Length: 356
Ligand SMILES: *Cc1c(COP(=O)(O)O)cnc(C)c1O
Image (cartoon, rainbow, N blue to C red; front, side):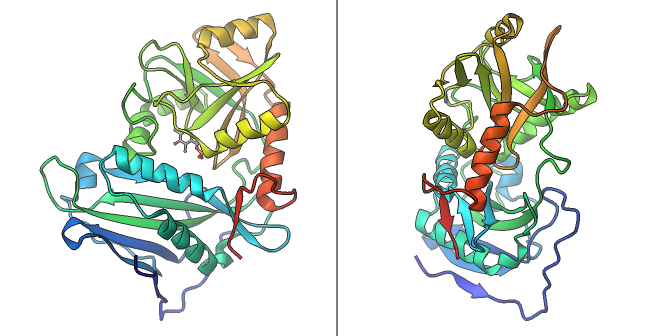
C-alpha cells in the first residue's frame, strides 16, 4: 500500500474552536480520504487534504441502497502534554466487521491506524485542552458509484474527519430519563444490529422522537423476537446493577459490541464485581426493582462514556432512581475510564495509543 500523501493547503486556514462546543457541529480543517475502485484493483490514492465539499452523483449507491458504515472514537490531550487515542484497534476491527457484513471492502488495519495517527497529529491544535474535552474521530465509508441496480458497490470512499467536542453533560454528570419501547425494535436477529451502519440509526429515530415527546431522553430497546429481553439504551450498551451481580446483555448479533462496554466489563472484573454477560428480561429488571434489589442502570458509549438513568418507565411502572445524582458505580467507572484517557492514572491495560 502506497504511503499517505499529504496535500497541505496553500490557503491560510485557521484553527478556531468555538467557546461553546455542540457535539458534532465543528469539523477540523483536514480529512483523510482514500478511494476504492474494483476496476483499479481496489483501494488507491490515500491522501490527507483540506476538507471540502464532495461532488456526489444523485445515483450514488449509498444514497439508495444504504451501503454506509461509520465509527466513532476519541483522541485526548493528556496531562503530560502527549496525545493519545483510546483503543483505536477495536474500532478498526469493528469497521472491518461492518464492512464484511455489508459486502463492502475492508481497509488494511495498518493503513487505517497510520491514517488516524497522521491526521490527528496534523490537526493536534484542534484538540481542546479544557477539562472533559477531546477530539472525536469519525471514519465513514460509503458506496459512491452512480448505479441504480441493486448490487454491492464497486466504488467506495473512505473518509476520516475530526470534530472537537466538550463533555457530553456540560452541567455535570446528570442522570437521564428513559422509557422502554415495545412499539419499535432496533435490530432483528441475523440482521445488521451488530454493525455500525447508517440504516440502523435512521430506523431508530422515530422511537427516540416519540420518547422525547413524552419527556424521556431515549428508549430502552428490547429484543426483536419476544420483545422481552433488554438489548441497548438509545445508542449505548446497557449495564444493570443488581444487589449481587452486574448484568449486561450478551452479544447475540443484535447488539452493537461497544468498546466502552468491553472496557467496563474488564474494569468490573478487576474490581471483583460479579459481572455477567447474559440475557436479562425487562420483567426480571422490574421484579428486582420491586424487591429493592435493583441498584442502578447505566449506558456506555464513546461520546458520553457513562450515562446513568434517573428513571426507567416500563408500561405502568416507573422505576425511579435519583433525578439529580448519578449512580455510584456509574460515577466510579466514569472516573476510572476518563482518568486512563487523560493520563491521570496508569494505563495498565495498554488501552491508549500514543500519537506524540
Ligand atoms: C456506537 C454504539 C454503541 C457504543 O459503542 P462504543 O464503541 O462504546 O462507542 C452502542 N450501541 C450502539 C447502537 C452504537 O451505535
